Structure formats: structure tokens, C-alpha cells
Image 1 (cartoon, rainbow, N blue to C red):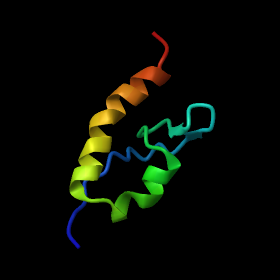
Image 2: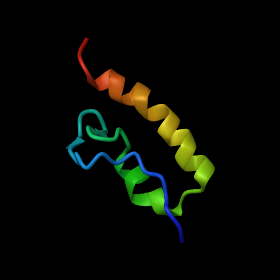
Image 3: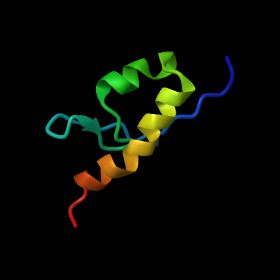
Amino acid sequence: MGWMESPCVKICTYEPGAGVCLGCGRTLAEIAGWTAMSDAERRRIMDELPRRLAKLKPE
């Protein structure tokens, strides 16, 4: 298996209230299943992450 793109920024802090990692924005299920997902599934999730993370940051 070759290189796999990942949104991980090595700031692994899960926020139960938000339901996502504060570093990358993924859910626990997405993190756990990342390597089993297709490239298209990973890309779809990665496209959603900026919006998820923006919701966590106060204006």
C-alpha cells in the first residue's frame, strides 16, 4: 500500500460535545475507518472538514 492522504495535524483532541477531533475535524468512526475507506470516501470527508472546524471556532 502506498501513501495515503490524511487530514491529521497531530493535534488529537476529541471533543465529545462536538463529536469530532478538534485537530482534524473527523469523527471517531471516520478516524477508525480511514484506512479501509476508498480514496473517494476520504476525499469527500476531507472536503467537509473545513466547514466542520469553522463551526467549532467562535467568531
